Length: 135
Image (cartoon, rainbow, N blue to C red; front, side, top):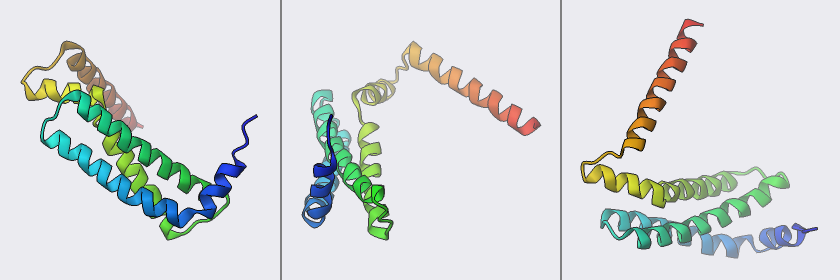
């Protein structure tokens, strides 16, 4: 069985060094991903950079979770969790699937499956909201 206690103890023991590396790495990698989107780089380059940036964000979220698991609830814990989550979400939005959809919209084409999914989602949300307002 996998024992994670050694890894979590290492994470908490070397917290300052880990955060000193992960905070700038997260910010730089996510900024670079967004810059590559702005520059309309190739999908391959964008996917690689988003994967690397997401890896940094996942490591930061897991590092913060080790502190939450032992009950350390302080402002830096939530700030770092928010930073890691924000970076992870912004990189996930630049995943290959989202990038393909984005490129399709830029070219003025909306693929049929995406259009049908959007119509279905809209009708489902509309029906749900109507049911909730009647209650």
